[in-house]
Length: 418
Ligand code: ADP
Ligand code: MG
Image 1 (cartoon, helix red, strand yellow):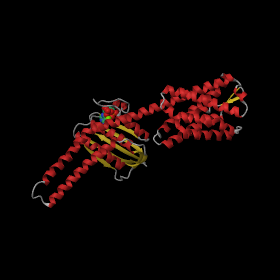
Image 2 (cartoon, protein in one colour):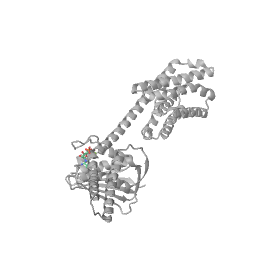
Image 3 (tube, protein in one colour):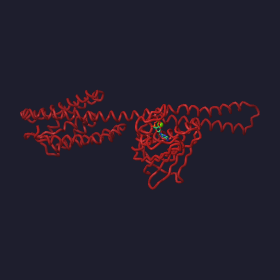
Image 4 (cartoon, protein in one colour):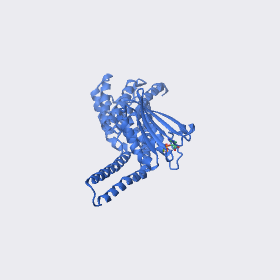
C-alpha cells in the first residue's frame, strides 16, 4: 500500500480541491439550472483530473473516477449524471482507451442506479448519506468493471491482484465518505447562515410593527375628521375639493407605509442588479421614518448634487443591511436625535454615510460589532450588524465606523460605482 501512497495523496488532493469552489456554487442554489451546471463543471473537472493521473499499482491502473461521478449524480440529479456520463466517455476516448463503446454500455447500469438513487438520497440523514455514497460508489465501480470485463472477455482481470483491488475500493469508500461529510457540513453551515438572516429580518419587522401601526393611525384619524366635516351643511365646492385632496393624500401615505413595510418582510429571490442609490436611500428613509417618528427622531436625507449614482447588488439584501444600520442608529438616540443619511461620490466609489447623534461606542465596542450575539439592548439579538456586515462584504463593500461616546456614531459604507 505504501508504494502508491504518494499517488494516492495526489489523487485525494485532486478530488478535494474543486470543493473549494463549492461555497460559491451554493450561492446559486436558487437558480437551479445554473446551480446544476456549475455542479457539473465542478465534478467534471475532478473527473478529468483524476482520470489524467491514475494510480499505477502492480501494473494495474486504477483511478478514482467513481467518486466525482457518484457525488455529481447524488447532488446534481439526472441532468448532471447524464452530462458526467458524456464527459466520462468523451474523455476516455480522448485518452485513447480501447473499446469505448463497450465501456459506455458497461457503465449504463451503474449510471441508471445513481439516477434512481438521487431522489431518495436527498432526504437521508447525514450518516445514511455517507453510507449510501460509500455503497453506491463501490457498486458503481464493481458493476461497471464486471460488465466491462465480461463484455471484453477478460473476466480473469477482475480476479487479478484481489488484495490491491479491495484496497482501492476501501480507499475510494473512505474518500467519498469524507467528501459527503464535507459537503453536508458546508450545506448545513450555509443553511444556518440563511436562517439567521431570515430570523433577523423577521425581528426587524416585528420591532417596527408598533411604529407602523401608530403611523397609520394618524392618516386614519385625519381622514375620519374630514369625513365628519363633509357631513356639515353649507360646505362650499372649493372646500370639498380641498378636503377630498387631503383625504386622498393621507390615505396614499398610509398605503405607502404599509407597502414599504410589507416589502421588508417579503421573501427575496437573489437577483443581482444595478440599483439607484437615490431610490434605495429614499426607500430606507421611508421605511425608517415611521420608526423614527415613533421615537421622536428626525431623519435628514442628503443626496449628492449629481444624484445619478448606481451600485450593483441584491436590492432586498442591501435594503436589509441599510435598515439594520439605520434602526440601530435610531435605537441609540434619545428623542430629538437626528439621523442623517448621505450619499456622495468619491473617485469611482459611492459612499453612503449614516450618522446619528446617539450614545456612541467605545473602540472596544466597535471592535465587537458584527460578531454574533453582541448586544447592549435588553431585547437585542446582537445579530443585526452581523447580518448587515455580511451582506455588505458580499457586495465587496467597505465599512468604516467612527464613534464618540455621548456624541454619536458615523457609518461609512463604500461601494464601487456601477
Ligand atoms: P441589536 O440591535 O439586536 O442589539 P446589533 O447587531 O444590531 O444587535 O447591534 C449590536 C450592538 O451594537 C447594539 O446592541 C449596540 O450596542 C451597538 N450599536 C450598533 N449600532 C450602534 C450605533 N449606531 N450607536 C451606538 N451603538 C450601536
Ligand atoms: Mg440592531
